[in-house]
Length: 117
Length: 115
Figure 1 (spheres, rainbow over the protein chains, first blue to last red):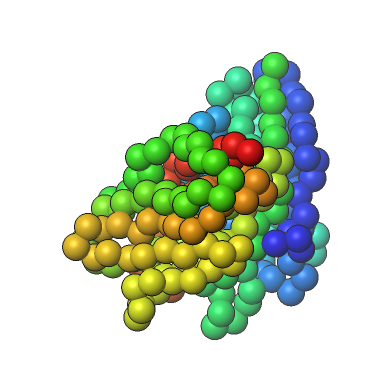
Figure 2: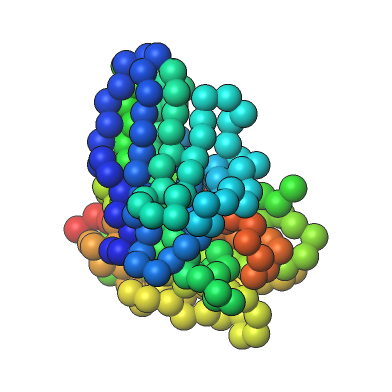
C-alpha cells in the first residue's frame, strides 16, 4: 500500500472554506475509491471513480462534495464550504485495471486528516 | 443492507497472550470477508481475506481467521501477540463478491498490548 500517495497529510480549514484532497494511485491503477473515517468509527465508502468517470457516488453527500479523477493527474476530493462535521480522516484506495479490477485488491493511502475550525 | 459488527471497541492483552477479535456480518448470502489493520497515522493494510473454500484462512504477521457460516462470523486470531500488534483492526465485507461495490467496514477494535 506504499504506492498510494495522499496529500496533504493534515489540512486545517475554517468553516466556509474549501478543502481539496489529492490522491495519486499506484502507478498503472485506474480505479480509485474514497472513504471517510469519522472519529471512533470505521471507514465509510464515499465514491468510486475510474479515469474520467464517476462509477458510484452513492456514499457521497449530495451537496458540497465532489470528486474527479482526470485522465492525467491525481484524483481530487473537493469539499466546498466546509463545516465542523466534515472533520475526519479521508482515505483513498486504488485497484488495478482490467479483469483484476475488483475491490478485493485495494491498496490504501495513509489518509488526509481534515480539521475544520 | 449488509452490515458488519465488531462488538469489542477496545481490547487489552498481555504480550505473548492469545488474541481473538470478533466480527459478525449481516447479509443473506456469504460475502467476501476481510481483516485490515491500521497503525496510528497509517492507511489500512490487508491481513487476510476469505472468498470460499477452507474456512480457516492464514494471513500475514501470524494472523488467522475462521469463517463460520452458522454464526455469520469471521473472527481474527493470533496465538501469541507481540507489542507491535498494537493497532486498530477492521473487519470488512464486500457484496456482490468480486464486484465493484465498495467495502463495508466494521467500526473497528483497538488493540492495546501490555508488556
